[in-house]
Amino acid sequence: MGIQNGVGLSGADAGGQFNGRTADHLLRRAEGIPGSWRSLARNFNSNFDQVLGFDQVPPFYSFGGFFAKGLLLTMNWLHDVTKLGYGWVIVLITVLLKLIFWPLTAASTRSMKRMQALAPEVKALKEKYKDDPQKFTSKQMELWKKTR
Image 1 (spheres, rainbow, N blue to C red):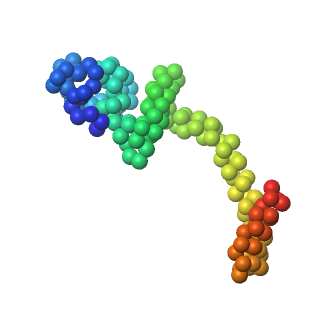
Image 2: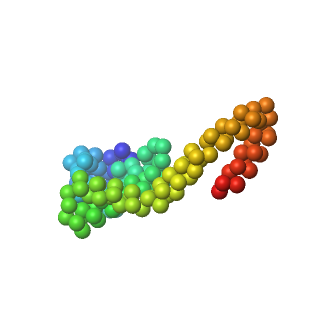
Image 3: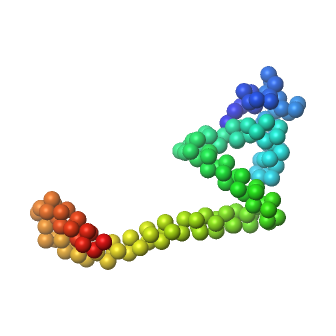
């Protein structure tokens, strides 16, 4: 977890207590229940993300924490708006992300197919210039520019 026993968070007393409860106690009660995260955030004075350790998840650390918080907020918002269960909200988020990233996926697929179509020509160039790697590289670049 992020901060041990809540010591150091605003709203905690010297013993790391929030409204008479420790951070560990509150976390154990809400573990795995996304909807209760909002009520816990009130107990931690909006520092709940520090207790969850979003900024300490390797290998992404604060970068990954940014996305984790965003996904959690989106999930809770969609749950409130659509009144769907969290499982269906996760499916909905997955579909939305696929739609958002579809243009990038399509461009990548087109590029890959073009490279596959050029593979026989690149192989022929490789065979022809196997003793001269510099010449092979220049001819390969010419081929790619020509077929762009």
